[in-house]
Length: 116
Length: 114
Image 1: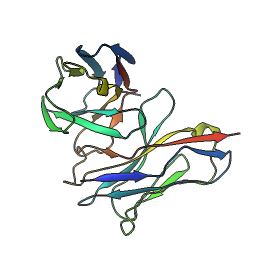
Image 2: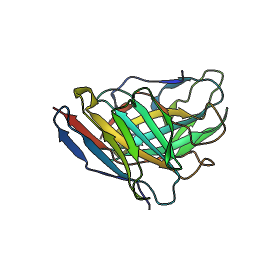
Image 3: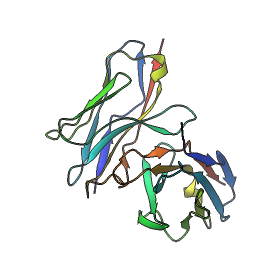
Image 4: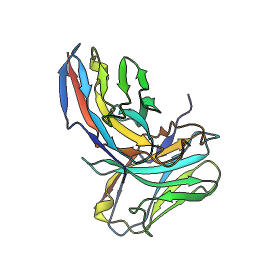
């Protein structure tokens, strides 16, 4: 079945450091890929997405590129801030149809802590 | 900005008791979901709901679980006889329609079964 493998956490970085959180997937078909973020005490929020190969999703300085050849969707940010401290989830959907209503399959989540 | 809400934020129950977790999806959304996350593990899909019926369910969603949209605004998850292993964070999500692919999540209900 479909699965998502995420970089083990937790990850601790200093402010302004470069961030990479690795994500690879196994899926039939051509999934859409997502990064969700969960801030303390809040629900999962969509951070960015990409729906086809070579698409780049970006938001709030974060980027991820859909790499079909390596089945990866690594999350990057050039200069992290304390406010980026959260849990980050990689996910996929849409392996059966092109419709967006299919369930999400998540990775385990990576807890990121940024220290001043 | 519209948001998904969930109540209660934390529910403690005894093993064997029934619990109902409540969600209010975003108004005019058409698809509804429940996911759960056992502490330290993946967020797992439980069930999806559309047009007043279950559209997909996982193997976790056995006869002890049921979902309902009783009044056109609430979306509930009922666990008939809770087990220790049902302790988890339960997330509700809603989706505007099949042409969209952003599910909006609530803050979750932490269920603790003693």
